[in-house]
Image (cartoon, rainbow, N blue to C red; front, side):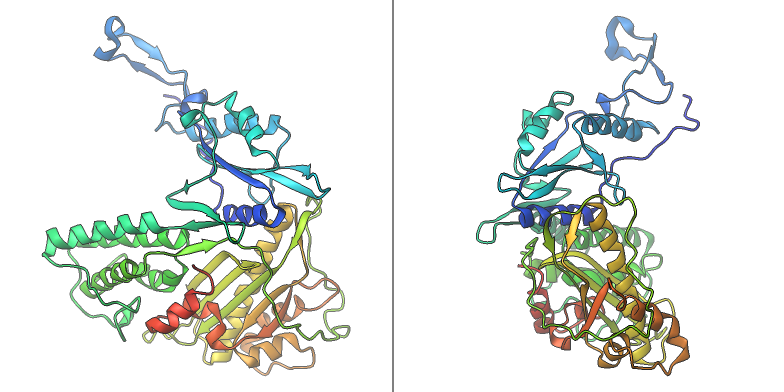
Length: 480
């Protein structure tokens, strides 16, 4: 085996790009098909020099040396070989890779009504999603080179463990973790029955047990076998969050912080969380591009502040096509929520229209002595994430209908960041203060910041554990 200096990268389109693509399909009225390439790696030639001694299953060839001429699963360069093979075929159809996500391929097209749009092919290993005017023709051309499972491309019903389908009344797509969640809950039920002869709790309105905090748990540490199972279940829960269970994002983030040395109380919280999932199994994340009806944010005269600022746009971005999309961001912070370290938690939710695209829940890196400081830090993080998503949208050729509408529930932060005449009296927050204000100014601002009541701030559930009724009300804003 000669495996020196061989590339090992694989085709792994980001889930964020997939959510954007489904939203664009509804926004521009184009079709979606998916396909699974049969054999995948075996369609490519290896980039390594590989050979093997034939076993008895080779009959008369047994004992002889054979050169391997296909990229076998497990070889160091097989993923890269397959990526090169599928990329060459897609590129031959006139598609170009997106600079923000190389596994998103795009080419210009024009609808019958004259609307200029982009067609996309998204690649995740051997799974393909084709979005365009006639995705069947794209699939037919690819199938001339690689055989599809079932010999055809069809509207997607499964993708990376998630259920996918159409919402007929909304003319848009949804993604749901129902089946994956059901299988995960059944796994925990079986483990409880065999290991402890117990059952899942039946009444679990809250994600965490009432008034329980993971940082205060002093129960005995788990044994190695149980700790390993805890880590496995945290991994399952993290994937559920990726598939759209935004309502458990904050709690899963908290539990993941104790994976190195979990305690019995943490395991009990994981069991309680699965009981919550059992009682709340259905959750469709709908990629509805319908704009949210925001109140018109007041525009201020920023001519005396940051007068030279303009939103940085890539020089090599493609021509924007299709209908414009509205961008909204909800941000929040739980000041000193960790009662041991006294660090706050930031929560951010970014939507295109009403479609959730990116969600974020993370403990802040420093201790803030006031709620203003933690909220301003969260606002800075939100603006950074907004800039990243806007860059990706531009590189995917998406039209933006203006600045992102950023909603927060701390009036002091909103006033400081959106009003040019306000002054910051806390020197420790000056960097975040100027960073956010600059992006609200200029001829082409990144964002318009405005206030939203706490009970309507969807990001609030990404910062803390909440009573069941409040969590359900906020969850209803993004999940069906």
